Length: 546
Image (cartoon, rainbow, N blue to C red; front, side, top):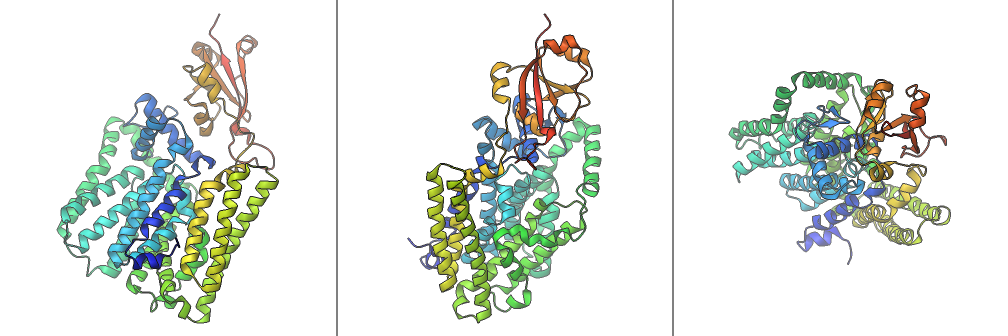
């Protein structure tokens, strides 16, 4: 069966079914092979302590209060932990499902604004294959939750203001989703995604979006109740700690990860393969009279620029914060691709060369992946079956790429991109794990979980324990001040990192301690051939006094 979006539309079969099927494969497959980072370790430690200690309303991380992050994503991860146990692949499923919901709500939002199923489907396809979106949706990131919920709120808010159908339903859902976004990461998404959308709507649709304005106070009230109850409870139960956290977090926005205002000038790189197309879609004079929905195209550009400006104003800048910019960028790119769908073969030579240039870049990417498979097969000596399957699918992608270049086939190009991403997710991630992980990584969790399941872990008070090590140990690490306190905790486990001095233990105590081995907790590939000393440590068992 040929993958042809145009033919599917003509047959009245929504292409979103096929696109969402491929996106589900891309987001859900291969996640166990992604190397975890420090952010994921923090989030899962909070979820683990929720389950083990019942800290459902007041989250903790390594025994200390963690009030900087609202608990909704942690609740989701804790529920997943109860269902599936301690597994990286299983813990990443909720974030992947949140990514699928984001794509679905984007489809509904674009469809409700343009009445074009093809344009909405293209927006989903392009966003679902952007690098920034994939990195957040395939890892345990709280950003994907807050933006997903808020995008659902934007869809229902748009229907509330532009349609007279079911105002009560849209009011309830819009307010509830805004509250869930606040409960995921505070007001971050309100500032980065909601405010730019409102600015763009006011500039382009203020005369149309006037229905049911009387329902807006109800939306605000529902959002405040559902989003701020937890904050009120925390302020009531631990006021001093919550105020300290508030001052610390507000200071981080001004003093942490400081970048110049022009740091996001290369935002288009976050779209990955589509970076040239993203730059091309910014040329408003070229497309304003050509795209099928010029007003909505301008709206997407205004939304993107407003989000970019608002994010650039803040001193703290990180690349993962750019998802609110990538979402409208995908819509703008979809307008260009939609125009190519209908007019490419009749366009001037310059426009055809632009399409061929993008197609050749994607072709070269697939060739590079094919060569990487050959390297893995002959030099890394990996299992041949998944490598052969990946190579076969990449050959099909190359055939579609060549046909896209020769016959100006937009649908073949998009089909090859979807198939390429799905193939890498299903069969290429084990290859990536061999290249991007540390072969010398080791964890004592199986040993201590079997031999010492109930013992606590301690460290010198002067030693700063990396949070990744706390996750690897599977339990809290408590600092001790002196030898006497350590002796009073026996029997226990004792951790000593390589890069920091431990307690000056007396000879009698050292003779009692049993070494459980030296471990390398660095999951990342070693830099310059040497592991990071802060992630290498020795673990000891201190038996009870005779």
